[in-house]
Image 1 (cartoon, rainbow, N blue to C red):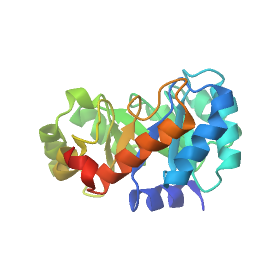
Image 2 (cartoon, rainbow, N blue to C red; image 1 turned 90 degrees about the vertical axis):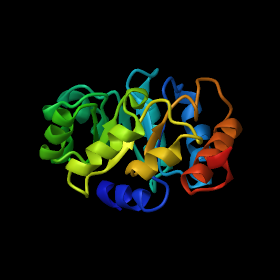
Image 3 (cartoon, one colour; image 1 turned 120 degrees about the horizontal axis):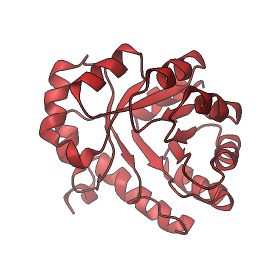
Length: 214
């Protein structure tokens, strides 16, 4: 499958992006495989991590069924760098037209970081694959509902920052399609088994399981 097909499949199943900030290159394979074993299919390694391109290359090669890519992508040149090592996903903390345009040109999924309606409409017009609502600590479910009311109904909204199994339900009810999960899923040095356990909790909550009311 190409990048867009993988993204569409994930949105229809487990619309969760695993943010592996601080991932060490030697952790990439066990952690990636642990996530994949739970059914998690979207993985982001922020470029602020140690040797991020090495980790991304390892994950992309080992998990061809997954949508693997980079976070904290701030320039078009970084888009090209991550694409060259096999990344199919670009995630930014902000909306940068050049980043979105380059990712689209290369056939990558691009999640642009936005916080305001102006940014959201700009990213939508630039053909971003989805909007990363960041930081979600400052974007309440009520704000998501207000954005959903004015944006194209097909626009993908993914709150990121402070998301827990307990607050996912309120965001989904407000119109969020999925989420990016960072330190609540993975912290540097965490074992692959621990990451898998966290992943399962989030999947259960996303699907409306018992963790959602815990």
